[in-house]
Amino acid sequence: MFEIAKDDIIARLKFDNPWWDSPFNGKIAFEETPRRKYFDSFHKAIVDKSIRRAIVLMGPRRVGKTVMVYHSIRTLIDSDVDNKNILYISLETPIYTGLSLEKILNYFQELFSHHRDSKLYIFFDEVQYLRNWEVHLKSLVDSFPEYKFTATGSAAAALRLKSNESGAGRFSDFVLPPLTFAEYLAFIKREEELIESSDSNNTDSGSIAYSSKNIDELNREFINYLNFGGYPEAVFSETIRSNPGQYIKSDIIDKVLLRDLPSLYGISDIQELNRLFTTLAYNTGNEVSLEGLSKSSGVAKNTIKRYLEYLEAAFLIRRVERIDQNAKRFKRAICFKVYLTNPSMRAALFGQVTAESPAMGSLTETAIYSQWQHSKTIDLFYSRWSSGEIDIVCLSGSEQKPVWAVEVKWSDRPYKSREELDNCIEFICRNPQIKQPILITSRTITDIDVEYKEAKFRFTPAALYAYTLGTNLLRRIQ
Image (cartoon, rainbow, N blue to C red):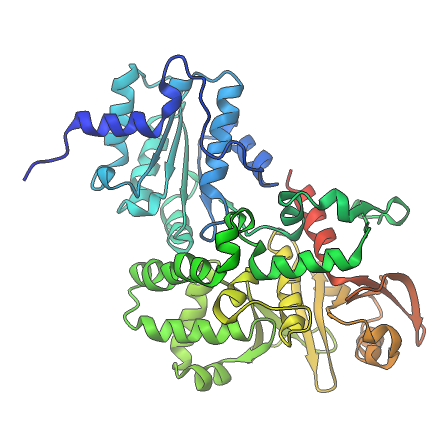
């Protein structure tokens, strides 16, 4: 048996790094695709050499991690970084199998006579395919302080676990969530056509208020977003949009459930994990319990607890804790809500939705929570008691007191039938410290000054709220 020759490996490195050609006048992969709103903060982290850390870019599959790396390489080249000081390799390429990061880096150094003090930018894509990658990467960070290392990977659970275990003080995690609704509209070039800022209604928090120029068209795009819009590649591919089930389920969900999670956690009963995830996906936005999940999926409760942790670590689901009508947390959490991190996963599993689909209510709520993934500082809960429920409650401060609340609807009915707001009235009466009007999302109605039983409410279409939320959250990370 022959080992892969060094010359063959170097030839592949040259193929993967076409900007090494001199002179280089060609294009870099994906350079004409739109940039994620996260790009500026990601690139700033890459060029910041004041902190000796590797960037570990993680997130769900197919949200644009590799594309963002290529965008960063394009920007480095455009800012006069020497093309031969940039190395990109995808570790899922078979020729690199079994090679250590050090060995690949050595080939690169030899090729261009780089030394220890050279200003190099190194990108290891799909790093989870290398066994003990975290040990190798930590050693490189320590050995080459002038090099800037970036690692990416789709096995988000594996990356997060290994990064926390072995990379303390050497790795900086950078999480890339699915597209926001605002990013989706920008990608399809309909943002300016459908949205305008509403300067007269700016809030004291620095957030910008927006209004819709055409709520019917905005709602149509919102439904498209629910069906496939969380994935950049699906936005641009008619083939994927026409059959998101095959693309999203096979290439995203199944790879995580069948390969990433079992290999990381030693899960032997993959079908059991798949049954549980299918149950959770169907019930996204609904309250569940360990007892109920055990009965419906046929999985033991203790096993469910572990699987929930795995699915959260893989960025497939998000759990939200329940509080009571007095905004108090339960000492023993029996019930909780589960949301898919990307509503498009439900459409892939169970079929696309329309404006009148029974699942629109829960999927709208899922989409709203999906926007909140882009905030790292807000504690969100839902409140449920015997006679009512509030979908989103924000607790703030050391005493964890409620400061605002949102009731998510895909309907205009509560605007006309005010008695449907009685649950909100009960919650406000028990929590008078809430000074802001409770926000009620609607299907088409906007009204910022509604009074009912001496309480104040604001109505805004759910699609517009999703856009506003995503836009303002992303403004804060740039």
